[in-house]
Length: 250
Length: 227
Ligand SMILES: Nc1ncnc2c1ncn2[C@@H]1O[C@H](COP(=O)(O)OP(=O)(O)OP(=O)(O)O)[C@@H](O)[C@H]1O
Ligand SMILES: [Mg+2]
Image 1 (cartoon, rainbow over the protein chains, first blue to last red):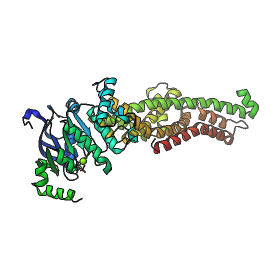
Image 2 (cartoon, chains in turn purple, brown):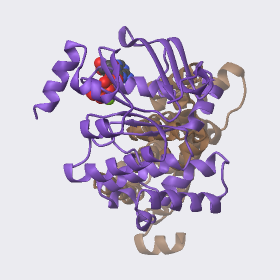
Image 3 (cartoon, rainbow over the protein chains, first blue to last red):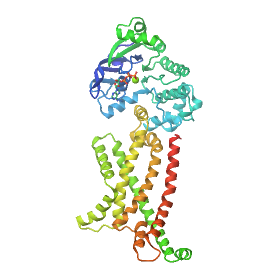
Image 4 (cartoon, helix red, strand yellow):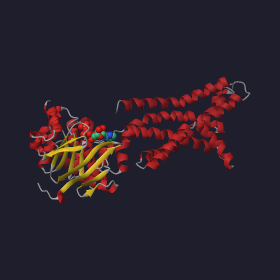
């Protein structure tokens, strides 16, 4: 893993974020390098979603600096747009556009941003739908697909923007157990292609086999930041031990 | 037409019905203008209301709040009678009724449409933001097509309120079904007593409003089943 500061795709320094007077992110420092795969876990309400939503400007931090792929998120619109050009996001609830076909879901953004003309956007969308193994569903509406298929469309939709970094916020939590695997497999294949990714998930097997680092959060702070082997075998904090015990016990 | 009605209903009922029917025209015109004009203004107010710019939001909120809390009758008085006095100008009843109804309609529809837009799942905005979709396109392609589902039934339902609302415009001398009817009811003519004329008018209002009400209910049932 290259460790020069210039290769950092995400750099957070002393980041704080409040919702009114509740502090959701406390003094977070985090550097992530190009090609790294990070899994974030932690108890509910610990700020995992808020953290990754700060990385593409869905939430605005109030102090500290966040730099993504060389652009600092200053709160200016142009900076946010610049960052979003490079960052794809996949949500727990898929958030597909229900009234547009799978193909239109994938082509809307690239066409709108003037990135691609219609033909090129179609071609690219089909390419990524093949990647996630559902090209045959291109003309259906999202509602006609299973949850696992919908989430794979959401991944393809994000990939159509050719992001340098992918954010996943509990991508399998809303899925029936039998559909989790197909989505995780898609993510593994992305990982194998060297995509930088930050993934909030409690899928520990996925974390073990794919992540370079596990970040454990509690009360808005990063409590641990370790390679998976160390994290799972030798968690440093009592909080992480407790968390792992709870998760592994069912 | 007039002759035919006189032949069927005799005098003066035939004449009354004819005059009432032709006055219906103006009721319908005024309603349409109020609806289209009010809709256009409401569209702009809604855009301001959902904009991310606080002063514009406040402007829109005040507009909605102001014209929603004033009775339509007050607006009519104010514009039809107050303004002409105050500035010593002539405001014809058409203009006054149109302006008052547009203010009234636009405030109501803007509120309905804001609600419809806010009913669209938050995640739709977030996904669009994350994908960097331009704001205008986001509204046009993502949000509005879904908001229409929530907004269409109350919008059509409100048309009924507008049509009934136009009846108040007689008070500033607007020559609609209401004024025509009231003239006849007050006229010392045998067969044009209030108990004859007003039921006739009620039937006419009913015939205009009922199909709309049914249509609104159909739309509502449809949007509830989520298609
Ligand atoms: N928009 C908001 N307004 C107010 N408080 C919020 C908002 N979003 C999140 N919070 C609060 O911030 C804290 C962190 O929320 P966050 O969603 O980041 O947690 P999380 O770690 O993702 O939890 P979960 O595992 O339940 O998804 C929570 O206490 C939450 O109630
Ligand atoms: Mg979360």
